[in-house]
Length: 195
Image (cartoon, rainbow, N blue to C red; front, side):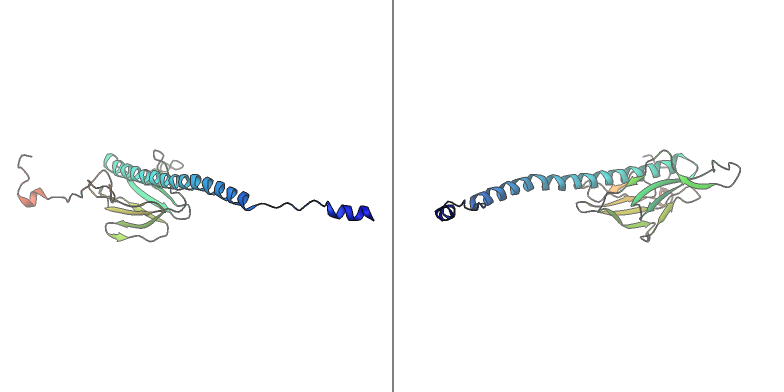
């Protein structure tokens, strides 16, 4: 009987976390979160900035291919893949004697927009395009439409404007960019004036 009472007296106490240990663990977790979260936000911002630059380059290529070539060029958006690509109206490689067909441009890359970034609005010559699959072709006479694309992401909101006579898109967030209006020198009577 003495043994039984003795074992009850020397029983090991149940160990739990003290308040100090819990506070230390919470402080360490807060430090880890404070260092990781800003990096994740910066990575998302960098992805969106890169996508805007890639769309800008694609618009520049669209203008260049239109001015340098004889083929019709088209800018195409696929919302299911969230991708923007350049298309050429050219001979069908499988049937060279047949009619011309639209095919993806081999000289430009498809721009894949990052998750969370979309083309919120697209206009061609002032006409708003639907959210569905769309294509903005150049005109058969060689001219091209005025294109405006509004890109909206978690960190970036940029509007790109490619004038029908310009070779480089204008960004809405560029403070020194100016939109030039075309002038008809013949109508002004200044067609033969020195520049």
